[in-house]
Image 1 (cartoon, rainbow, N blue to C red):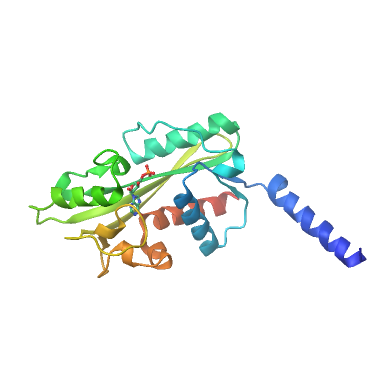
Image 2: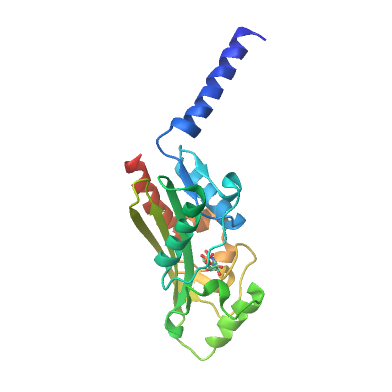
Length: 221
Ligand code: IMP
């Protein structure tokens, strides 16, 4: 092997070890949800995150967690603690919980967004939401996202992002997931499900919460 190839190999390998083992910041993301992982990676790339980040598959899978908290914060914390019980204390661990709050439904489905209407397909869940609002002139709603971060010294930090909008009269668009087709963010003439990932990433509740999380981590690193 040529000497310069050998030196390049040693350099890259050392840098890899530095990033994984010695770098002061290594973040465990408490999720195995492929959609959330993709979105987190997209936001990381957008902001040039340069520390190692590990997801479900990297640490042998996210353990099952009973999300029985009474707030997004409590549920996100339960996910953090669920992973901590598996991988041990003294690490940076982050988890997220989110939901849609509809004013005319007194904030429902809120923390129950993923389970609204029981075990039904999301298209039916969206129709159920629209039927509950059929007599309502108040269509205002908001997506909420909360990140819970635990630092190696055991402190908890919470970061919230909110995206205000309205519930449309009928589903619109085929992108995204969840309630995207029925939610139109304020200042837009289209639902989340019509937007590209990049457009949604500029205004979404998760992007807002992620920005706050990242600002904190960059100062902590
Ligand atoms: P979680 O996995 O317990 O956080 O569930 C959050 C639920 O809220 C999801 O299953 C969706 O139904 C809904 N949700 C949260 N964020 C979004 C979003 O950006 N678009 C559409 N639905 C969302």
